[in-house]
Length: 101
Image 1 (cartoon, rainbow, N blue to C red):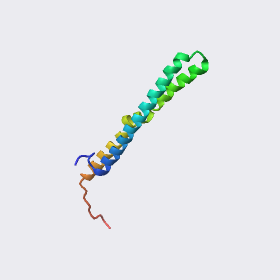
Image 2 (cartoon, rainbow, N blue to C red):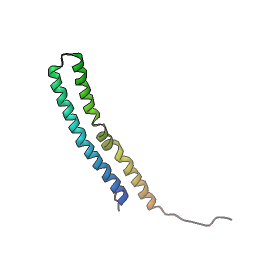
Image 3 (cartoon, rainbow, N blue to C red):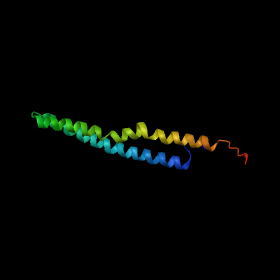
Image 4 (cartoon, helix red, strand yellow):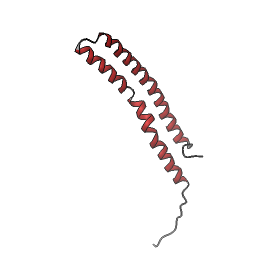
């Protein structure tokens, strides 16, 4: 059994990656809608308020991608690292000896 194959770590990683995929689908949808809305506003963006709204939609769309990026770039590494540590500890040889009273 490899370090990521331990049932608990496999479940944690699977749940995290499922959350990442769900977040990615939601984030990509929000990003697409925001960019589409920003494009529509670009045709009417003659006033300052509409330009601010257009830029806000663009920024908001990219912020919606924050969580999926965080999961796929950073959050899965600690789970794999912890799994490797536990795997190494499970293979460690331990000797117990009686010390001086």
